[in-house]
Image 1 (cartoon, rainbow, N blue to C red):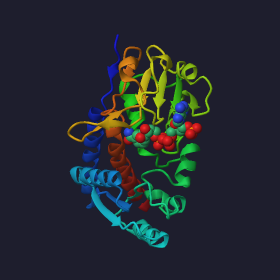
Image 2: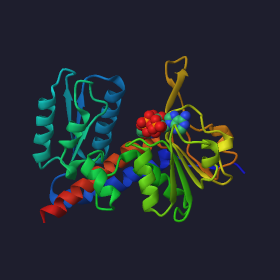
Image 3: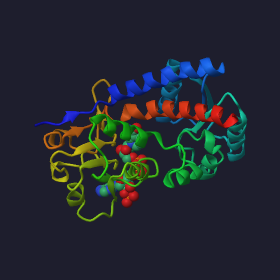
Length: 292
Ligand code: NDP
């Protein structure tokens, strides 16, 4: 039987509705909304699109937002000064620096200048450390979205074999840690893994975060597995100029073997911004709690 499709569009909408309800409660209780500041340096067109979607989503959910569009020539000190100002700003609960930064800037130092209490992207080493040892921390948004999609299937994670292909700090490693926290037995694969299809074929839950179009074919998939395709790969353009996107998984083959599968587009993609809104909401609740 063909797999059920897990719609990220539907689940992301549920997350947005949940957050919009909490924003109202928060405003009633505190007299002001949660706030998110997004900093973008330079004019990378893809980054611009992401930043305007984040801004639009904040507006839709009633979250206050500020955008700092800084020129390509911005220096390290000026950028860090802006972040430090936002760290102290009580209207702002989440601070996000859109990546990638122009090459002359030191990304590590920039991310470390964000107050971990406002680090809604979860990239600060303190956030990563707290997360790994099981303390309260912000976690990158795409892995959080992936977990929501898996939870939505109703398939129990505890005790299952989970395989993650990819070990980036943004997707692979954090999603592996989240699965581990839910008591899966987790294997992380990468470009040097031997017999990748064989390892993947043991997975009850397979997460592909590779960035290689349709690499994961039928030979990688255990019958009945939950397959989450994180990949977003452009393989051409349509006549109207729109990008043709495929995932890391050969969808048509995989859906005949898996029990649940995410499509590309419309799977993991829509979850990322929804989970950013969720994390901004959490940051605001925590700020109020910590003020006492
Ligand atoms: P990275 O390029 O940072 O990491 C890719 C990982 O895949 C690396 O760990 C790499 O291994 C591994 N890899 C590459 N080739 C192979 C191979 N042939 N066999 C096994 N492993 C391999 O990518 P990201 O983690 O940032 O992103 C992964 C994908 O997810 C991309 O398509 C990206 O566009 C997409 N993405 C989607 C998001 C969304 O919102 N939907 C958000 C973020 C990413 P090694 O470490 O050994 O080099």
